[in-house]
Every structure is written in C-alpha cells, then in structure tokens.
Amino acid sequence: MNDSTEARLDPALAAGNRKALAGYRASHFLWQVQEGVATVTLNRPERKNPLTFDSYAELRDLFGQLRHATDVHAVVVVGAGDNFCSGGDVHEIIGPLVRLQAPELLMFTRMTGDLVKAMRACPQPVVAAVDGVCAGAGAIVAMASDLRLGTARSKTAFLFNRVGLAGCDMGACAMLPRIIGQGRASELLFTGRSMTGEEGERWGFFNKLCLPEHLLEQAQALARELVQGPTFANGITKTMLHQEWAMTIEQAIEAEAQAQALCMLTQDFRRAYEAFVAKRKPVFEGN
Image (cartoon, rainbow, N blue to C red; front, side, top):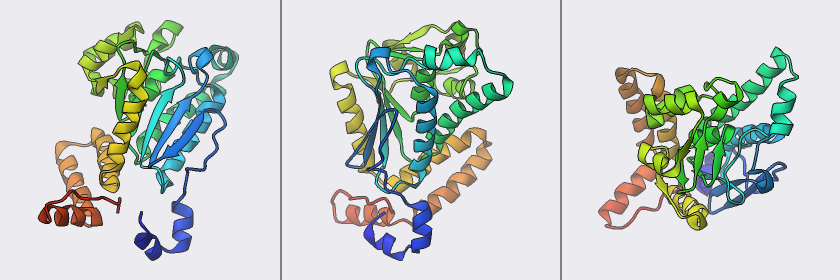
C-alpha cells in the first residue's frame, strides 16, 4: 500500500489491519525481509531441520500475521544446510505424542493443520526451496506452498504410513492429488516412499530443479519477480485458486467475475493501461 492510500485510510482501521513484519524477531527459525521478500529458514541443520511443538505454533501464528503485513509480498521457505525439513522431531514431538490422550492429540493435529490453513490463507505467494530430505510435515509444508523449486537430490516423502499413521495428514489427501494426480498421490501416501527430484519435476510437484548451490538464490529471485507484479491482484489469484476447489464451474466463473471486477478498480490496472499506451513497462504498487 502506498503513501496516498495510507493517507486515505482511517487510522483505527489501519491499526487493526496493517502491520509491518520486517522487524519480527523469530524464536524458533530464522526470519529475514528484503525487497518485500520474507525468507523463513528452518534452522536446525544438525537434525535436518525438524519441527517442534514450538516451531509449529510460531509458524502458524506468523503466517496468520502475514494476512495483515504491509512490507511482505512474497515468502520463501528454506532449510538450513543441505536439507529442507525432516518432519516432526522424533524426540520432541513423536515421543510425547504416544503418551497423550485423545483431546491433546486432537489439539496437536489441529495445530499442524492450522499451519497449512494459514499458509493457504495468507495473500503472499509462498515459494518452497527444497533440497535434500523433505519428509513428513516437511513435505506438507512444501506441498502447502504455492510454488516449489527442488534439486536433483531432493527426496520428498509423505512417510506417515511408515510410522503407523494414515496418509491423510494436514490436508495431504485433498491437496497432493491436485498437484501430482490421484494415482501418484495414492502411491506416495500408501507406501511412504521418497519421490526423487526428477520425479517431482516430471510429476509437477516441483516447478523446476536447480543446482543445490543456486537453489535459495533462484527461489528468492522468483519471489522478487512476484513482488514486482500487481501484488493485490496476485493475492486475489491465490485466494481464488484455493477457494475454487470447492466450487462448481458455474460458481467459479461467477466468483472470478466478481474478483476480476474488483481488480479492475485498482490503480495497478490503470497503471498497466497507461504504461501500454506509453509503450513502457508498468511499475506496480500493489493498490
């Protein structure tokens, strides 16, 4: 949102709905914002970056706050070192879970699902930069992202079956078939085997494969490219991509008509037209 828009916005409304997150101080992972791109780095490389109760909750809350962020327009999620994320920490999550009763177990599974909901609900495109091990909840975080870059050595495994659990975890049975197809998703969820980087690219899970040493650089470059676009309209695109899963074609066409009419009211739409007339590239401002 630019200065002129802020000037027209009631301060009380802005206080409750606009928030700068560049200065956010993360406790359980690394957080950095540059040029409108936030980078979340899962930072336990000695354990292949597993998640804990604390990191799950903080990620859930942070992605929830992104709905109100004024200075973040795209997000990159990456793992420190040579791996993305090995899933839930065996000692800090799996061990305690076997001692819990149903109400507490449901509290946990709802918390993990709420992370996926928050990733899908935030308007910013999320780019996962996946190298090495990407397993369990790590595979879910990659799946819940909007775009995924991998490497030839990526090993993505929805391994819930291998620990005695169903593959229906954190939305996997709903989302994974839509990304790679029902048969391929069924294979991964029933067997828990690893999907190679080459398979992931061929099946459409990865948008492309990168050399490991260039993975983060290319993910951030892609995110910066998205930031240069009409970010308000991009947020609408993300919303509609998600919401239209549960619509008929007729409902989707009507919803898109309303969404597109809203985007036609933006200054970015006018900027694009004026730039076309002047034979120059438009400079979008997200309003």
